[in-house]
Amino acid sequence: MSEPPLKEPDLPRTAKVRPKALRTGFTTGACSAAAAKAAATLLADGHLPATVDIPFPDGRRRRFDVDGAAIGEPGRATAVVVKDAGDDPDVTHGARMTVTVEPRGDGEVTVHGGEGVGTVTQPGLGLEVGGPAINPVPREMITGAVREVLGERGAAVTITVPGGEKMSRKTTNRRLGIHGGISILGTTGIVRPFSTASWRSSVEQAVSVLAAQGGTTAVLSTGGRTEKAAMRLLPDEPDVAFIEVGDFTGAALRRAVEHGLERVVFVGMIGKLTKLASGVVMTHYTRSKVDTELLGGITAEFGGDAEQVAEVEQAKTARRAYEVWEHNGSLSECAQRLCVMVAGVLERFGEECGRRLHASTAMVDFTGERVVAATEERWVT
Image (cartoon, rainbow, N blue to C red; front, side, top):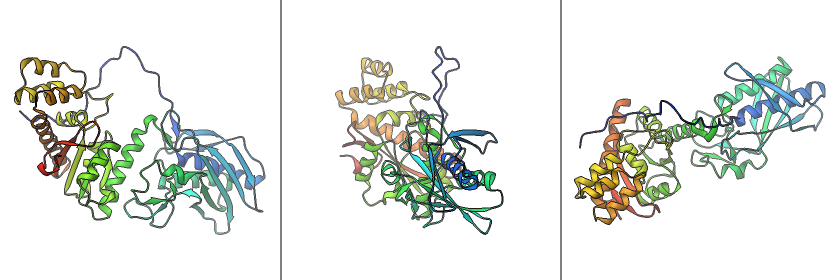
């Protein structure tokens, strides 16, 4: 079979039904900046605004409701903005971003993490080890928002997030070496629905952390079940090597090449593997489809009759091919062929990015418990 060309997924030129637009939201960094401005206003003139507007990196200004505030010790004010993630399934949606501002005599604005904000414990994030997990763009937004109120007067800004440590357990923070709370994130201040930008960013960040710790192998999977399978396959690899890429295999490979990694292992189920085998490295179900003709060709290659080949080619999902292969006794051979094709695509994509990575692939069943085929024979169970 000829090698499939590497490609972006085909998008429809026209749509019969225009889907309802998903509502954007705001990042933890943007909400922290808004709360900082509200607290600075309260500190400066004793007045708590009902809303505040702050500048964003794109040059626009956006307005936030202030949920509450208080003046505690003399010369210290606290304000709260509740994070609205829009239609994004974000674990920090509804978080009460709580910011305290107090004056400094040196004219500097410093930003600190309090309870519920994670601490950086490993290199590779571009942040100081031992410092708070507050990214550069949020720091700039917070500083700019406070300066709008206090001018050249200095201030110490402390962010706390009630329940932040519990929220962080549902994120990849611990694997990235962020302990004790959430990260204060954002590059634009805006959360795009379904976290496509944030997930891609987290994948790239995970590869960077792996490289910073001297890792040479990235073990990629698409979700929880496939990641657990990968960990069973490669028990000697450190936790930081295992990265849930979701649909962002291409982003992971680019970053792996950039950091000089030597090897990539991909563990997945038949659907994602089929998309990768056909050359699609952005595999979201709405932006790419399973190439059932490719699966039909594999079926024929390993003894499938005309009826089985037609059934596979006309199927709506890759799972049907898996069932046909299993029924006619060719599952191991067909799945093996698919794994070899995927490894070839990953290696060629890496080469197009600047350097050929050594790639291995494993296919697991739909429970994630059994490896049905792999480029490494010893992995098959």
